[in-house]
Length: 130
Image (tube, rainbow, N blue to C red; front, top):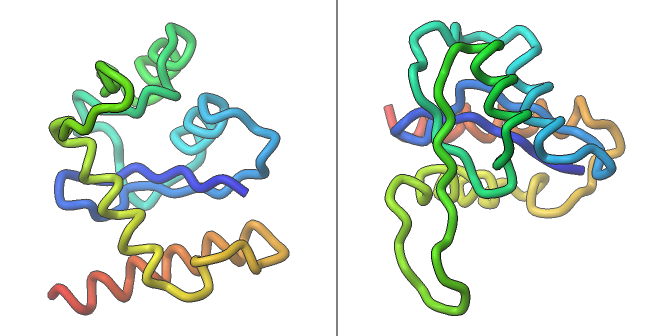
């Protein structure tokens, strides 16, 4: 099971999708932005992605789907710690999800159940914050 999430600058979700492990990250990212979402991506002008989403195919698909430029945040050197600007935002969101006991392990049998647990976990974050 793979979880793909798109978050804003505060770490709150725009879109989320859960796929099986045999689907590549690029295909999962394209699938996430292809499905209807509760948020309109028309205001998004640029997106910062992890190094696994690198490639012309993904950039072209994102330009076609949401009309946004893709910037890839990659690590420059291995085995050294350096904070990469803005990459920690998504990592913090995954940290919030790890506080949820049912998302701590892959204990759900259906992908829809896992996606619902992700939504509940983000709802908990929103209720605690506001």
